[in-house]
Length: 384
Image (cartoon, rainbow, N blue to C red; front, side):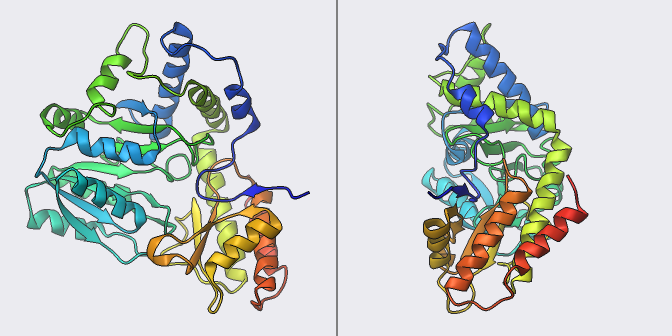
């Protein structure tokens, strides 16, 4: 027998309470019973987004929600700036280009953090830029951008600010309204402790004004259709939603509210700190700017001479611990430990123990137990 541990930065483990909520009898998506669930979900999402703005839900992954921001706010030929620090910044570039937008790609080396001053300079150089896209928590590198600083710059210059916080929301501090985010995008399968399949967008008044002027084609992801359905006597989705996922998410949001958003963010801070302490104690190097802000995922360079893909494979096949490998240009060069969502102290300790045994098997030299011991010290000094 081998017990399985899911330690990726998405999908993440789902609590039993959420799974049981999804196992309840099916209800009709146009009946009052579903509307009650739907309204409860929207209230919970507004709390996590820290917003008074409208929140819409789509049956999609986070990428679908990213695409929705492009097609609902812009028109062909519009100039936009993408702050690109990794794979998901590149995805914003690809979506924008697919729909014929004029993209300025403010690209950094993978592992670097964006600078608000660079954004300000780019906007100064081209005052026709209508929107700025940025990633909050870049899952591919473990780097977290300073969205508050970038948001202040974008507001000053008058452009719309669109942020992918798919792996940030619920794990890291994120204040949609206070940080001047016009469209915040997220998904269900990360810190919200639910299965994949739901995408969310929080939309400001400025963004709604842009929706009225947008001429890009949209149907399923139409914000207007979603808002019209939301404003009915019995609030609902414009098209058939994944009812069971919505019921599960509703339960997850209740659990989040019960734990308290501040407590959750603190828990993630400690989990991230412990994971980094364990990695450092093993003599491993972090990938780029994976520092004190990287509390959703820890990105680690594979030791010289060891293929990062082998580390991922051995941990999964021999020890039952699934972690994530590197994506795109860093495939085989790094591995990533996820710790956002339904995680506790012992998940980190088990993962570090499995990592130690894996590295030992692959010929890496270190003091056995050093990683686990360092993480234990963090937990004993930072109870939660």
